[in-house]
Image 1: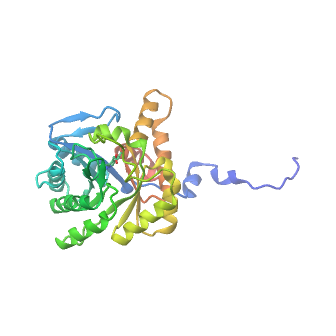
Image 2 (image 1 turned 30 degrees about the vertical axis):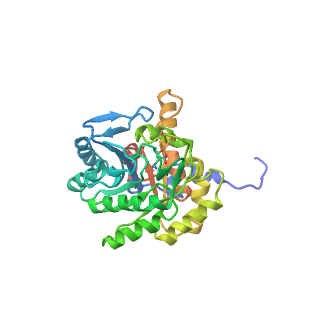
Image 3 (image 1 turned 90 degrees about the vertical axis):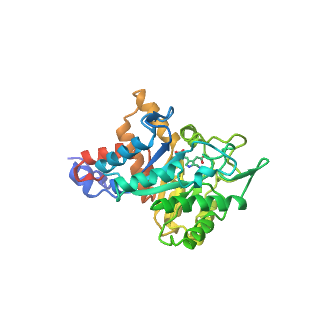
Length: 331
Ligand code: PBG
């Protein structure tokens, strides 16, 4: 007989699948997913180069997509628009018949249960490609607020369930809340991209949304990737101004930030698994270097473990399929 050594047997609860599932600490359900969608005036589906599997959708293609999402059980979307024209005051962002406003109405018609959130920002809608109004080489804060609030209002009036400002101007949550309330939309929640870093992980999105800045970068308004205390300040300001949910973006390299927010705030938290994170996985999977399905599910589990209630991901439809194939629809 072997000598009796004193040590813990951590492997006891890993012995079979059922046991592992029973003691699993973190679970993921399809109900926690939101799918980002790019809508365009061009009819049809148009693949986005650096995001294989992601397309720009014309309105009729979007109408069909609404049904595909319902069939898969994906409960929510966040809409991004590609406008017909860009101008200095980002007119299409808040136009009654803007692309996003039309897409909202279509989705409402096709599936009243779909949770429709909208990205509220100006960068796709003006030639400078910045998230606020530009004077010279400055992105001016306070003047941008009224256009951003107007954009949020027009989305809510078109029937959006939730508005999600991503511009990172100071005071935008206060401006949006006041605008919505003064138009009787007191029940429309705000999901704030409160903690949004100036990140290279947005690279493929800028092609997808045709929103790369024409000059400079976004570092005067988006956060420095090195900062986490500042994330708490951003989050606190947005809560004080009236945000109902907060987001951390990007996701993979910022899970400590998500955890820091989770430990301090009680509101629901979302994380955005952004375009560059998607592209890296797809590129490696297409080479046969990684197991896409396992990598994706491990990432999703990591976001949940770090504290995300909601995961915004281009993998949402794949994850819905994976979960369906698993017993109980849960990881
Ligand atoms: C627009 C916006 C961006 C993303 C979401 N909203 C790009 C940016 O700030 O440059 C990034 C999404 C992604 O990379 O998937 N302000």
